[in-house]
Length: 148
Ligand SMILES: O=C(CO)COP(=O)(O)O
Image (tube, rainbow, N blue to C red; front, side):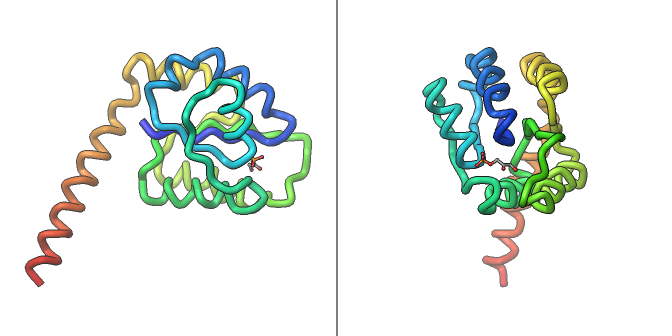
């Protein structure tokens, strides 16, 4: 599964602790993160993480682009509800895209716990069906192109 990890500054310690607690699970998946969050998690755990730009510099939008391609399977985004963010429109857009594509999104540790247990139980295997059907439609697009 492709998992996006994002945290606002005052929530970064919480997310680092959360990833440490479930490190064996996270190690089995492909991890993506906004710049500073990814660096913090990598430094704490050594996990390999594809890092995008920092959130205020477009990182949320880069992750949003993967969601719009239906390539992101889970988003764990510990938001800070008590601090105004300069890039609030990007944050709103990311959450909106999760709803557009029905991507499981945890915006706090309580929901993230449930999501990770569900992931370990196999509750998210339906995402593999989406990936397989995407692969098939890509193949048919390619064969259509070669017929043109
Ligand atoms: O601002 C963020 C999400 O909106 C997070 O970005 P950083 O991980 O780069 O701090």
